[in-house]
Amino acid sequence: MRVVTAAEMKEIDLQASEVYGVPSIVLMENAGIRVVEVIESIVSEVKDKVITILVGKGNNGGDGLVVARHLLNRGAQVKLLLLADPEEFRGDARVNLNIWQKLGQPFYQVNQLNGINIVKVALLNTHLVVDAIYGTGFRGTVNERVGRVIELINASNLPVVAVDIPSGLEADTGQASGPCIKASHTVTFGLPKLGLVVEPGATLAGRLSVVDISLPKILTESKDIKRQLLTKELVASWFKPRSSTGHKGTYGHVLVVAGSRGMVGAARMTAQGALRAGAGLVTLAVPQKLQPVVAATLDEAMTIGLPETEQGALAQTAREEILEACRRADVLALGPGLGRQPETVELVKSLLPELEIPVVLDADALNALAGATPILADLKVPAVITPHPGEMGRLLGIPVDQVQNERLKIACEAAQEWQVVTLLKGARTLIAVPGGELYINPTGNPGMASGGSGDVLTGVLAGLMAQGLAPGRAAAAAAFLHGLAGDLAAEKLGELSMLAGDILSYLPEAIKNVYL
Image (cartoon, rainbow, N blue to C red; front, top):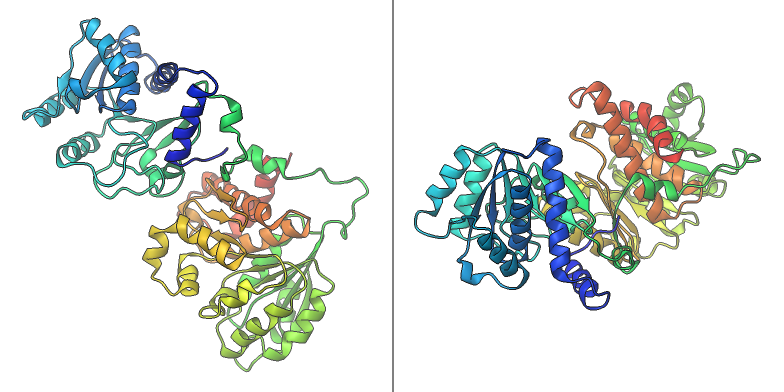
């Protein structure tokens, strides 16, 4: 499903009206009806329910006025609260306010001196609140009076349905710099807005419903919109059925170079992730003394022991053996559990320029590149980096808080500057592709915040690349499947007790859910 900015959505609306002849007031009417349908799904029967609707003077408020009229027709008791003078309403919003007035229905002006008290009284006897104050054009911080209204609504513990976007939330960033509606449901029109599918906007929006308001599909499915929210259907479309004549060589060979003394688990989980993702062959290369350990616990993978330092990490003399192993593989997964020994760091730096197969870089392979990111830009092969916010902060030399506050900007700029697919982990993982595509992953949960989870993801990603998926799609599909496996595990086990191994255990079910 494609994801738009506020400006892109505004242009789609404009094209729908001016090019394809769909009147804007028809779009507003359809939007209001779709919101009412969602409200009916929440409260079952709206008849005799008391519903408070707060409307601003713009088109979002006009949508709210349509909602008010249709709820009234269905027998609801509607309390309509205006946050602007009636004279300020223009265009289609003014038309719908006129209809409300001609029906002889009252409204209350919250922008007057006693407005806050009006809101307090209205919320005392209400089953549900509809937020139609600000739309996707909102930027910055709400004014003091609106902020107080929003705080009252949030404190009421009533179900809140936001029209298109929660008031106070920025449509392009998902950020709220001041008071913002915490919706239980958001009904957005045509396409999801970027700020509704990234954090913290995704949480503030609650349950998101993307509804059809009769916008032409030629507009909403345009390939000019390069951002996509990952869905089961989209990910499934990237997979091809396996050939009846396929064999282990058909489905790719992943070489995993990982592990060090005390961190052998990271290496094992990466290899298992690649196997579970369907790679035909997996070879795990670890420091020499760890090779018997991993060989005894990984029946399905081949293993290699490499030269190691006194501290049990990979030595720089392992470089030629790794390059030789790469000649027999299709994809290299490098980094999990390598450690940060100076000699291992130099090994990573000297190895990368010599690679001739695609590479997935994670964990300590990324830490090795802190202060040396030009190596990424100079790679001769396709690459995917999979940093968590801390690793991305080290790569860029910036605080983690800045990474979290500017996730969209940082992921996209990193992909362009270094010409690598950038998978920035976290709530709503982002996958930015050098060509400009951006994938947003909705799967996953806090139970996955456990050591080893990222190692599993690295293996799944490398396994998918080995089977022929392009790096961007492989990264997006891996994030989706990894998160889905985590969701399935959380459903059965609960989030608190989940382990990374549980993600591995539920990967087959997640893949079956999507692939078949």
